[in-house]
Amino acid sequence: MKMWKRIILLFLLFQVVKSSSFSPPGSDCTFTLIKPLLSSTVTCSCACSSDTEWCALGFGIVMSNSNPMVAYKNNGVCLKRYETPAYDNTFQSSNQNGLTLTNSNTNGEFYAQWTCPASLFSLLSTSMTWATSKTPTVGDNLSPHDYSGTKTVIL
Image (cartoon, rainbow, N blue to C red; front, side):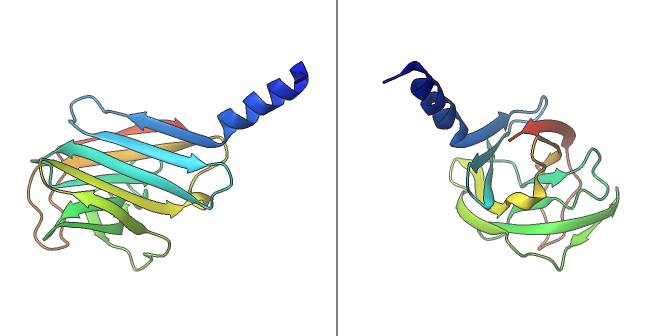
């Protein structure tokens, strides 16, 4: 095989799936984002210790207006998009379109995996907000987060 064909083949192989994982300091969670090349969805997941009650990923440089996707314990694992118009004001969004819980576990760890529309991500990089809490939720009402921060991911 000619050298230029090998180079193109290697380039295509590395472009098939893009992913980013991060483990925020202070938190015992690992967040992962995976985007297959031609997919219209991104797979997101959080893997945390069993005492974690909820984890969230949002899009923005601050929690306000990041509209996070939140996985939380409620007779298993639930997944919902929330609106955050102000830092201390969080409520469930009426727009749950395109958000699908694909895998979850609360035995020995708190794990949630979901898909969301790839259109939520920019082509080059996205500022993500993240948060976790070990304080139990009451129904769909989230407890305050114990840890939070931002991370720029490239997909």
